[in-house]
Length: 334
Image (cartoon, rainbow, N blue to C red; front, top):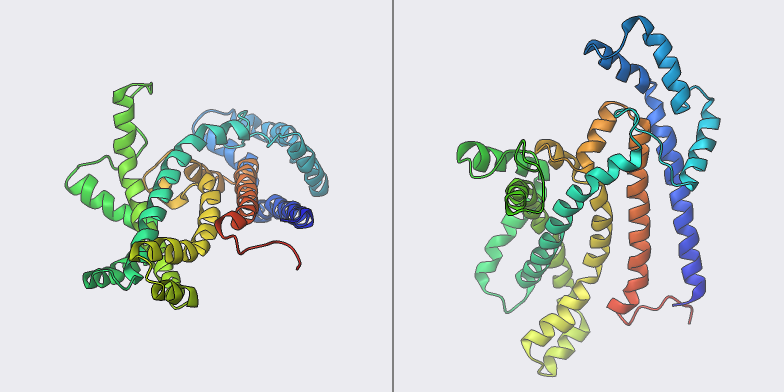
């Protein structure tokens, strides 16, 4: 891998982040809503703010959050804050730094989505490859319509079905939340068991939909790979079926899967927004939904910035790993 290629990809990474951060700054402000005003009127309705001084308080908070400056100055100050690692203060949770809000929610999202995504990828890819393999039992073909159905159903809809069947009808699992209400979390079996029970339904919804997606993709790639000359040559050489399947078929067909996996894993930090909303799971996705509803500029910007950087860095790392996955790939001019 040439130094020139690494430099060009790194510069492209910087350019992507610059454009994304710029759009991330301006798009939330296109709504024309005043988030400070909306938040304080909500507090006033609940009796938490002196209604007589509300306009004065709004002006004070706008000055505090820098929303009284011209837009171009807000943009420059936004970049200056990012360079210092300061993502601002959440308007929704007055006085709480955005980084603190995100870090508080991030472990829940990563724990749920990372486990579910890797399980769906592994099972779906292997199952999809077996569906396309010529020596697989014919009964396997009956699973193709099932994979097509699962891949077409959104995660959140699968979640609603699971809530109705396993939480409301049979009451095997809790319908929402991350742990039992009132439980003080600690390193104890009670806490671990409670977290596990509450994670079963949302993770099952993600795994079922993910298996359909990864399985169909892998089946298509495996069918294409089986028509390649090197597959026929390996068969003519009399190699064992297991070796042909793993070393020649699965290894080559899985390359596009790893690219897609890098993108999906990079998106893990944003959470499965609608799944977390359906299950009221306290992850980053649910927090992003609340930030959008309340028009919390700084929290939206912080979460989207995290996603953009994660995706860009994930793709860069995947580009660097490709030569290790497939020695035929070389990033240099011949």
